Image (cartoon, rainbow, N blue to C red; front, side, top):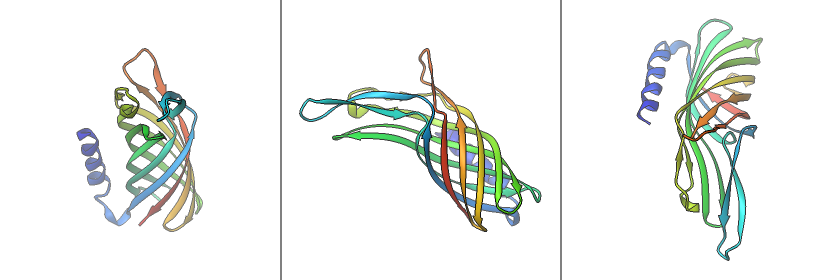
Length: 189
């Protein structure tokens, strides 16, 4: 987690130095998972059980960051956030959480359309199985690719469709795909 905060501080210090062309940025969103799901058997109070699935790509997302205008058409968006997908049955919870840092090159098409592409680095991916009697599965930090298209709804907000391709290594023979497509709402000031 220490690496996460060092990267965040470097991004803000370096990219927001010219504050006359930098905007603070907040976004939240959620999406459709197109990656792997992990099936977990959850036992209810009466002894009955049900199978629940936790996705490695879906869930909700919150991020804070900045946008640096480089030229009339080009800019740089950088965010750090928290992404989680959890399933709760009875009093048991299974949760997959991680801390993404995104760096996107943004191209402005006209006044209201943006396209972007870049990288994401997700720190501390953790599958929490404590409530169902399992051990936590911690994946290695993962790097993936991001493509995004957005509509600017005004001078301080927009709606973005984002696709992320990423794989998590839980230390076993197979990788877990966390690919997803998500809808984000962003505000900047």
